[in-house]
Length: 297
Image (cartoon, rainbow, N blue to C red):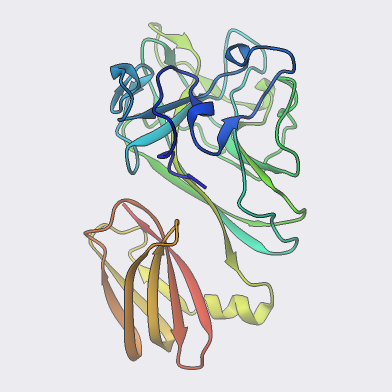
């Protein structure tokens, strides 16, 4: 829910993740006031304060990847060992063991007079429990997804995807750096800011992506899109011929629907779509259902 960080009471302070619907601080200390917890941030154009209104926010200049909101967190802190910020959310339903899921996140580095530097290891972890009560809790040196390269781009959003096979009935998703300092590569950007790599994140999703049998996985491969990611036009091809096609936004909204005459190729005009991730559902002439992830730049 709320994977694009749009819904909630408008932020009136930094560390406003708790004002954001469904999301919360992933590290919570018992018997300690929340403003002393590691404090990831939420930015939205509805805020009454300019420093919290994208694009020119306190922690850097950036237009949200989509919509009007985005979150921010640091992945490394040169001042404190293994210091991290984590944002967390309860999934709409438990993952089904053995099923395949696709995780998607968009991220970009932030440079300001508050934070600076770059790191790798921004990632995602799934758990069956809601949060950690110590700073050390998230540092397990493992994650279901982790960006291995140092992410230095401060201008362009980068979209990352990861296929996951659920090995537990996970119910909670966490975003942050789950590796200790010795396994994290951090690079200073300049001498004018604190050495604390900070990243904006947007358009987070985790959706069931495929079915499980080898036959079903083989069916998925016969549906293709080019170019993908794309900006204006995509060509959709299928070896089996397509009877009907639908395209959904991550929130379930249908943006394209068409009946086809067993076509093995058709064109999608994606120019009017907002940037983000979409799901193509196609039924071929044999009645098989195929899904394909589409990315609009």
